[in-house]
Length: 459
Image 1 (cartoon, one colour):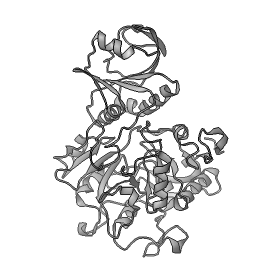
Image 2 (cartoon, helix red, strand yellow; image 1 turned 180 degrees about the horizontal axis):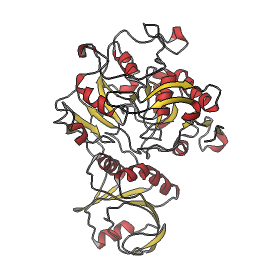
Image 3 (cartoon, rainbow, N blue to C red; image 1 turned 135 degrees about the vertical axis):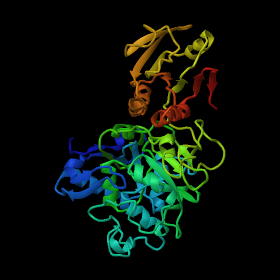
Image 4 (cartoon, rainbow, N blue to C red; image 1 turned 90 degrees about the vertical axis):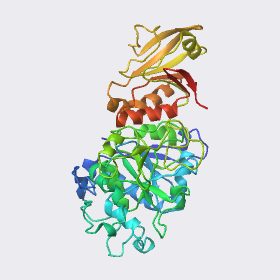
């Protein structure tokens, strides 16, 4: 990976008086030596960090960590799910910078990311917040250690000898032992005194917390020594970014730094769960399925607490619940598994359309038979409509839910960049964790959904 940063100035942005946006490549193997592994009961997969301070990669990572601590302009960085847009979760001015850069509604809460269970517990414990001013922004806990944590940041779920002393509710212990670090966000009650910026919670009495499974993200948060509030690093309502170039497309001129750690592994955001209610519920589907949760002690009766359509009323309990999300500029038409369209409905979908993007899977639900063959087998083919031929641009995602999730947002962005009039997406049965997350995102993105009962249009 190259180690020179890319700078794009205001003259290359469509926004007046915009900021310079720099992309800082970071290869973790160049920035430091570390171990990254996942074991039962080990909540931090990165350990034994030895920084290579003379490398450009370390300097890029340190610059990003310094900005997180001191700047009010958020920093974009990769996680295993999607790229996040991070800011110091304890400073209102910094968190407001996230909402401004994304143009995000202020009642949409944020998830707070931690590098270790120790860091989370320190935030939850009353009277253990670091004295930031006295330590030049790094933070020093009452025991005299830096808030950035020890050199080896492994921490076991079993380290607290008495569960009554642990500020993390016991209902979450089986989940954390099995799924952290990873794509799981848990809802926690706000501690008192209130350590987080109020903008993080959007007025709620709870906040979402997770420890990501990306070594670069863990190292960045560890180096910054602060909890990092971070939604996806895209413009609000747009498809989530899975590469640094996606972030640059949406936020160029709005932020200063993008840490480029390569493409994300998962491609959809974390599962969000609430164990503070009875029965516990899933508020957003993601990489951890409800079946996986129900296999854990205390979560046998876990229920679905989300809708695939945007929920218009009331305050959202978790990100992604209330507003339309994941939508490109072009109109998205989703063809559900088992769908059916009449010739009249097919004609209505094609009338007035000149260019269509086709996103296909292995589900074979594609209802149009006017392509070359029964499905579009070429990158560019044509559909017949009442007004003539319609040019199509085809992106196959693969057959498995993992492949589909990994490439979905990128495919939507690629087709949007071709200025197609509409994007037709072939859905999959929402069985299993990744498939349910994929279909949840697609249903929120779609303006038109085609099912076995016909077509419906979102309002």
